[in-house]
Image (cartoon, rainbow, N blue to C red; front, side, top):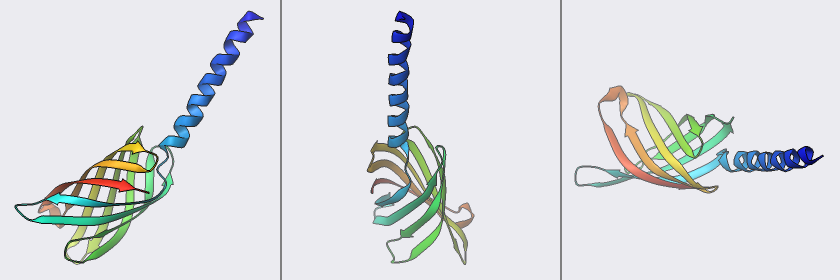
Length: 137
């Protein structure tokens, strides 16, 4: 009888931790933020909207829209992954020059906030801008 009393509380604790971590880690939904880019002496920023349609526990799928400092807006497929509180989202945007790519590498600060780095790559690997981003739902 004592053995059953010991096992039952341990099972309850394990189940509670599993349920709580599952609820906290899902990043499906709409995220918005501004990527503040570091350039050679000029300020540049890109507004980012990430609509994560699917978060299956490790892979992400959705749509990303970016608006650059020139007023151009691009929308494309979002794909990425999540490992614990670390999230990587990539958006690809087709243009007449090829694919632009926005990569967002963030750490989950809460259920409604992501902070980290952002990278904007131009077609054919000709260059990349690096910055920081804070996203919220």
